[in-house]
Amino acid sequence: MNKDKIWLSSPHMGGSEQKFVNEAFEQNWIAPLGPNVNGFEEDIKKYLNSSPLGGGQEGAEGASVAALSSGTAALHLALVMLGVKAGDEVLCQSMTFAASANPIAYLGATPIFIDSEEETLNLCPRHLKRAIEDRVSKGKKPKAIIAVHLYGMPYKVDEINAVAAQFDIPVIEDAAEALGSTYKGQKCGTFSDYAILSFNGNKIITTSGGGALVTKNKATKDKAVFLATQARDAAPHYQHSEIGYNYRLSNISAGIGRGQMEVIDKRVSARREMHDFYVDLFSEIEGVMVHTAPNTDYFSNHWLSVVTLNKKKTAGIGREDLRLHLEALNIESRPLWKPMHLQPVFENAPFYGDLVAENLFENGLCLPSGSNLGPEEKDRIKAGILSCFKQQK
Ligand SMILES: *Cc1c(COP(=O)(O)O)cnc(C)c1O
Image (tube, rainbow, N blue to C red; front, side):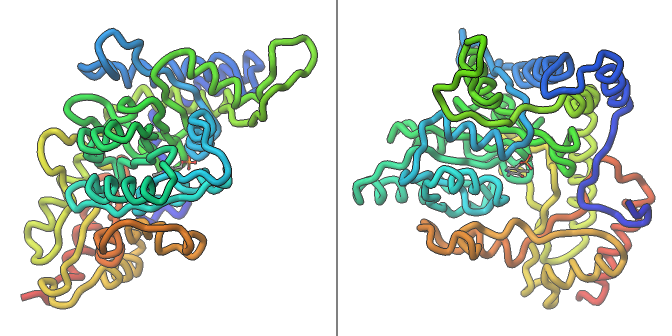
């Protein structure tokens, strides 16, 4: 990688990753199973269950974790386990990465996209309810709701869960960007029967590529692992009664994950410091809002720091102006996710909402947020941003 470039979010090793990878080589566990896979699952499980509420209701077992080859695979399996089939409808947050919605299409089901609300940028409970009522009145009750903790900010968990409970529709929690975030003190990834995590190269921790399905108990985890390893029945020969997948995480990748789990708390702190850095920086600049938790119920890992520009107050400087200005300085920034209902591939999918996600896409920018950005990089980012806005006033 070009040393000079400041990336939006790049891998940040903690130091022990190679030790775990070497162990895999020494023990010849070069396979999609082995001690690192089991150890990584235990690490995540402990971490998720460490929040005061222990990942769920009193007396509950707490979260169980199946390590998989990607977050996308985890979402696919969650939908399979909820019985989603061709012709079904699944509700999904429109403002998200395409990976949240693609697995709906893998199953031949139809995504129904829902707008965001402005406080968390996530699924709007009001439009969600309206969409469910409308789909039910048309004769089809949606099979599941995919809600996303975008950029690490928890969605309105209580409100979304209340709507879901009212209509008895399961929620799949897309926590791909939110490992380390909490809502009312409880870790994201523990609010639903099925939640997914991602360890892609750009996420808060990485296994180079990987993901996990988080379930409420060991039995559902075992079922997920069964499906993820080609659904082999218990027989000496190869016997199959269900369609299976090849979705397990490699023991090499899991070794990287074990090293990363040793430093997860440090990574969360560093990302939150980047967010503080931007809050401080933009307090001097008119017309730019740093996306921040609505109140203390929401604790974001601030995987990415997000700003929105109000051109009327920035003397006409828009998100593309800022993005291109930074790009010329070799500093990467990116527009927010383009909403799914505006994507050519989903142009026929129904959408319930207004212009919240669309406006966020028009005016929002993700800024460099890596936990590995030091004082020198911060100085360059600060100078770059200030020089973009210097003609203001
Ligand atoms: C990264 C991401 C995924 C997919 O995870 P992969 O591990 O890349 O397959 C899903 N949803 C969201 C919101 C993501 O950011």
